Every structure is written in structure tokens, then in C-alpha cells.
Amino acid sequence: MSCTPSRPAILGTFLCAFLFVTTVCASAQTFTSLASFNGTSNGSEPYYVYLVQGLDGNLYGTTTGGGADSSGTVFKLTPAGKVTAIYNFCSEAACADGSTPYGGLVLATNGFFYGTTSAGGGTANSGTVYKITAAGALTVMHTFDGTDGELSYVGMIQATNGTLYGTTSAGGSDGAGAIFEMTPAGGFTSLISAGVGIGKFPDARLVQGTNGNLYGVSYDSGVYELTLAGKVIFGGNTLGTGSGSTSALVQASNGSFYGTTAEGGANNSGTVFEMTSGGTAKTIYSFCTETNCTDGSTPWAGLILGTDGNLYGTASVGGSAAGGTPGGAGTIFKITTAGKLTTLYTFCTTTGCPDGANPYEGLTQATNGMFYGTTYSGGTSNLGTVYSLSTGLEPFVQPLTTSGKVGASVILLGTDLTGSTAVSFNGTAAAFKVVSATEITATVPAGALTGTIKVTTPDGVLASNATYRVTPQITTFSPPSGTVGTTVTIMGVSLTETSEVTFGGVSASFTVDSDTQVTATVPTGAKTGKIVITTPGGTATGATSFTVTT
Image 1 (cartoon, rainbow, N blue to C red):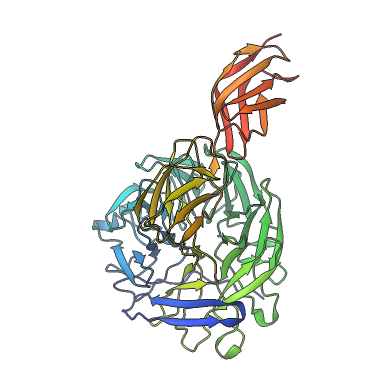
Image 2: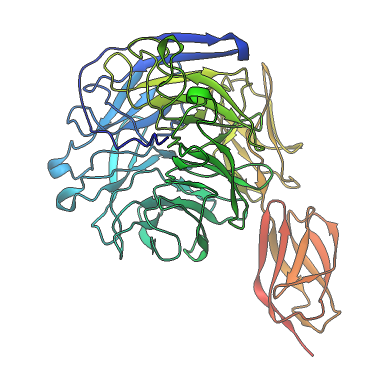
């Protein structure tokens, strides 16, 4: 069967919020429908939206329609479930600020949220890139003109170099989309046009792998890898037996990437696939495998990695409808990296769908341990809902960046952080400041190793939801030249976990003397070039080349 939906039209109506709670006792989880979108004051029909937690502990997102000008909103969701539009698009003349924001937001290290719109931006009507404060002050950072891309349907990411990266679904040199980068200050560069080695219509939000490169998915079933400079490593690979993916990839602790397709698979109802870092993909689950599609169908949204190591996502249709009959309006599911799927919740289990319907969007795990998401339709006004799902996972802290050098400042998001007495990076104590109940700033300490960040609060110890990678540094090496067999002393920072040393790309034998010194031997076959040290935290490259003499 095929359950592929068409892109819904943008609608609008009026306010009515509600609270709808369902407890699924068999799996000890609690689903709560927090509020309904109303079309006027808070927006309508959120689409490819991944909610993002702000520095203040609230969640932020966008709607494609509704608002004061019927062109979409940026909204805030409080932990208590109150939804408020903080900005209405098309407020400026000729929609210079943009309209119809399909994608969500990213919280950058400067404290601003950044996002894109799929339309508006003046006469070009090709969309915009904007930044916005938690108070709703919006600034247009770039206006697409078609040649540099148009129709940006998904949100951006901030890479470890501090630059923002995003995609457009059309425009560019061949009209099939583009990949772009932008500095937080607004410097815009079109990196590559889709179709040039990465497939057409890159509808999926990018993700940065632990190797530092960008990974994405194009709608015509291609996965690709790019360097931060835009060099294609691979592209055009198929997604197992699936197709029609618009979902972001997520990298698990085993190094593999996981994603979904909305079509294909054993039942032509979509898949979950696993992809190696080299681009080899295989299907690990086909939807609509269970009787009457009780497992769901057509997952437009991507997956997230929960703090328990499992993957979580949504299917846009399927599941058991009201009264237990087939034809539900979507599901929330958990799946292991081995492909074992568990349906956690089915939408539209009550007549009228007060809990929501058609979750085209994925989940976000907030630092209180709970999952949050939105539905495109359903709710009191049939214009979508916001909801939470508690599965019993514990609170945690979230570093805003997942890697950095010794001395780097790291923002930690959390819950009930007031009164915290200690912060450590893999056991090494760090200097820190409690900014608020939901934010701590800490400094990566000397001697820190790649691992878990922990915060000691009055209520107990909170661990980070992601491994923090301490990147190594090479400060100098001596001698600057030598023959094969020469002993070279390499000085730097964070060298304790060195796993490889290369001279001009050739691996060398080495000894770790301390966290600041490694001794290596110039290997046979070495060529004049840079010395590179690799650790679990990343790579460090010498500023100058080592000259191999004869």
C-alpha cells in the first residue's frame, strides 16, 4: 500500500487551547496534549519543525501558517504548555521578513535563534534567513534570490566551527536546490548546488558527524557527505529499499547514521535505515509490517537519539484509530539500532482527534527527560497541537556545542540548576558559573578527556546527553625536518588519548609522554607535509609542514 501524503494547504482559524492526557500503562509512559494551534494568535499547521530548547528553558518552534498576517509564526512553548506567538511573519512591507517557515530553529552559541522561510523576502519571493531573540526581535540576515537557492523547507545547524549550514529545496545553478553557509553575523556563501554529486532536492536538515563533515539526504534517495568547505566526499547513494526521504540523519554511539524514508520498503510505506560513515545504507525496518499498520506508516520526520541509546521518531499516518479500528493518524515509536520497533502512542485515539493528528515533525528531548513534538492537524481547531511524552527517562544537561578545545566556554542547558556545586568534564573539575535555573557556563579544563559532562545539583548529579569531545592541539614540534627514522617531539594540548600520528598522511609509531607531549618516529614513505594527531576528540594539524630530507 502507499500512504504518501500531499503537501497540505495552509489554513487558518481561531483560538481554543486544551489539555488532553493519556497514560499508556503497559509501557509506563504518559502522553499529554499541551495545546492546540488556533490560526490567529499563535499560528497553525507546524510542518518540518523540531522544537528547540532555549536558554530560558522554554521550547521554540515555527508554524507554516496562521498568525496576524496568515503567513506563519515563531512561537514559544512553556513547560506548563502555554503557546505564544513571539513573531508574525509577513509583518514587513512586501513580506521582506519572509513567510511560511516550514523548518524549525537552531539556538546558536551567541544566544540567538536562526531559521529560514520558504517564501517572502520581497519581490524574489524565494525565502529568507533570519535571526530572532527569545523576546521576538527578528532580523533578516539574507534574502534568497533563486540563484543562491529558494524554498528552504528545513532548519539549519551550527557546526563546530561556529558557522551555520542549511539547504534549499530549489534554486541554485540547476534549480534543484543548494547547500549554503552563513556566519552568525550574516556572511552568506552558497557552497554547492544540488545535483552536483549529492542528488536533487536536499530536503533534509544537515547533521555534522564526529569526523567533522556534514551529512545529508536528498529527496531523490541520495545520501551525501560534504566537508565544511563544500567538497563532496560521496553522494547519490541509495537508501536501502526506501525512497522519498526528507528527514535528517542522526549519528548513534556506534558511529552509524540512522534515518527514515517516507516511501519504499517491504510494504511501500516507508523505512528506517542505517548508514555507515562511508555511505553504505541498509533497511532495518519497514513500516506497515504489523497488522492494519498499527506500527504506523509514512515517516516524514527524522529520528533523534534518546538518552537511553534508543532512537525515537514519528510516523505521519497509521496506527489504530478511535475505537481500535485501522487508519489512525500517526504514531510515536521507539526503535533500537538493531531494528526492533515499539509503538509508544497512536494519534487520534479519541473521536475528533483532540490529541492531534499527522505528526510530520520529529521529536525533541528536553533536559527534563521528556519528549516534545507537534502535529500538523487535529486539536480543537484541527490546525495542529503541541504535545509531550514521558517515558521515565531522567533529566540531563545538554551542551550547546559537543566539542571544543581546552579553555573553550561551553553553555550547558538544564533544569533546576540553581545551587549547582560542581561541573566536571569526564571527571576533571571545571570552572563554571550558574547563569540561571536553566543555564550554566563552564570552561573546558586542562587535562580534560573526551567523555561525559556532569553537573552536581542540590537534587543530584546530572549527566550530559552527548559525549563532549575535547579536541587536541599541536603548538610546536622539533626538529622541523629530518630523515626517515628521526625522532620528533610534538608539543600540544589534550594529547593523552592520541590514537594516530601521521607525517604527510603516512602513519607513524609514537609514544604518549604526557597530555602535552607525544614522541613520534618519521615513518618509511613519509612525505613532506603536515603532522596530524588524531584522538577521540578530533584531529590537530601542525601549523607548518615537516620537511622529510634524504
